[in-house]
Figure 1: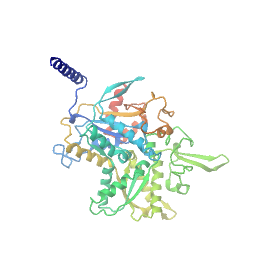
Figure 2: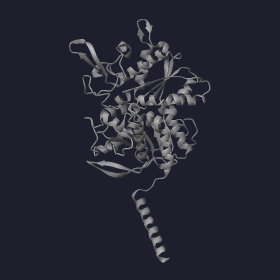
Figure 3: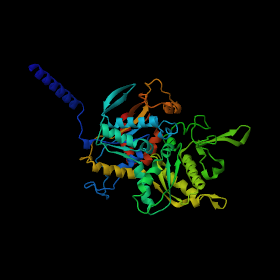
Figure 4: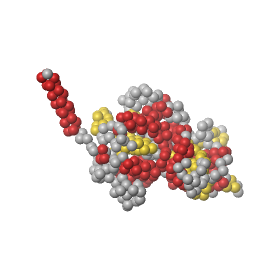
Length: 474
């Protein structure tokens, strides 16, 4: 009996000692003081974080709808993750690898829910502590379409009580509210993967019954192959150092059978040809004969895809004019002004004496940015789950990015240090390999040109991001 008592006391002492040591190493934060996690396949999700940071749609004291002159998330802290190494997510469906995509997404979720990660220090990596998150905002339409339910199932099993918010429901609700008073065709401008998932049409139709007066919906979708990739400077779609068409290009072109540039529509595209934004290959025996055209600029991708969307409407003989356009990729709000400008040009575009697209579109087209509605849903979820921070956080926000794990000898990299296209989409789910490492945003994994875009487009996010990057570079 005495032996058993001594054994129990020894176990109790060991448990107490371990608990004490853990408490000394990493004091556990109260749940309400933990950060909100936001993740995307790249930097596009920062537009969602921007919407969250500037939101003033509720009373901070009561939580009731109505602006009070104070940002709704003013006391909250954030943790952002960009899965840059594995983007673009939109191509996994075409490659038949949606199971691999889900695997990437769940690994991102596990990172946000974890309390440590492998931190780079020079040429090696060490385990470093970080806070787990109290809520997850999936700032990626493709990830929402393919894996939101899987993420919620995982959370319920392993970390119950963490709300998980996606962007598709939010964008659909905003479009339906507009349709209540402005009947027309809803355009969904998203990645090819999001379009292939049918996520927006399915959600729009499911929610439509809750919005009186909407009735039967008219929907047209366009997959913006290359647009998000060019915004994030993916070498397969955009390279500002090249001067002529290249073999590893995967965007719209004359030679592409999947996304073909129609030479009869060149006046409508109205591409910007300056500074190698459009690359042309000419027949050496006939300089007037163009053998290929490749897009090499985000605005030209916008031009190609908006014309393609309107041409689809002509082919499908849609009766209601386009009056609502959902920006169904978090990268697209970076191009919101450009999209509005090009739509206006197309409304006024003439073939001879005829307005080619005016019968297909309203003079004003409402651009729906799901980020704003997602921010509202996130705030409501925060209050409903009693997770709002009680005092303003003094912690610094953390911006993380996934980069190729060069310790894995099999990896294949482009000259710019990112995975080759064939390696990225040639991998298989279930191989249990550590393809990526996670590190803070810095000036090596994000170009200075991209930071300048952040500065112009993200006035609330940029100072926080700048603070982290400058701190790392000192």
